[in-house]
Length: 240
Image 1 (cartoon, one colour):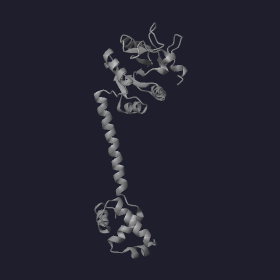
Image 2 (cartoon, helix red, strand yellow):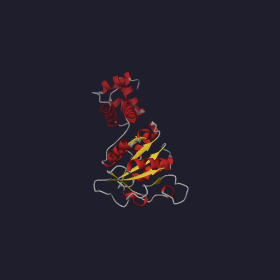
Image 3 (cartoon, rainbow, N blue to C red):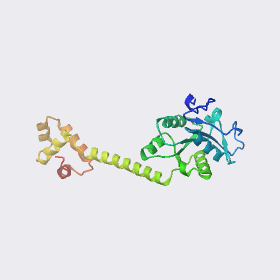
Image 4 (cartoon, one colour):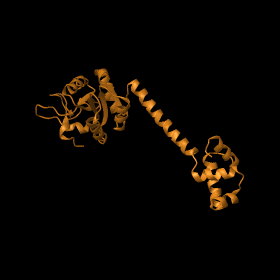
């Protein structure tokens, strides 16, 4: 995964939009120990980047990688104020890198943004106001282990959102099951008038086989017992 120029650490005075960087003098070629988690830190603001890096460099469980080896990091931390299009694009790119898992340290994250980052493959989120050394380490270890981490209120919002989607899907399914086509409604109306299959076929210009199939489909789809039950259901629900 090649990181575009604006996401690379630059040698010029102007910092990149989002870059990855490890502290100067820290070993970055490989983990110092086999059990260390390799981490790449991405940030729009160099102050945010340095703050997270300085917290993590003190922990022996972590080995920080620079830009040259960022693609090989077990955990990629994206540190931002909020999730905009640039951040979402970076998260999408990281998602396609099978060598790494991505976590987000963010200032503000609304319900819509939460759904967006989850769609980008992020399953571990930490608010910047809570990002002390212990919490950052917990986040990194969870990411490396493939675990999900969400603040309690965000988890509640996510569950509410998922529940809403499920209810909407059920409502749509219920609507599709209980709605009759014009042909179905016409045939049930004729059944309610006492007509049999032959008479309905003659009146609608359909074959007797088609009439039987349509009525059978209604009864099966609505889980009813017979034609009389179907007529009663349709009348009660205002379908005919």
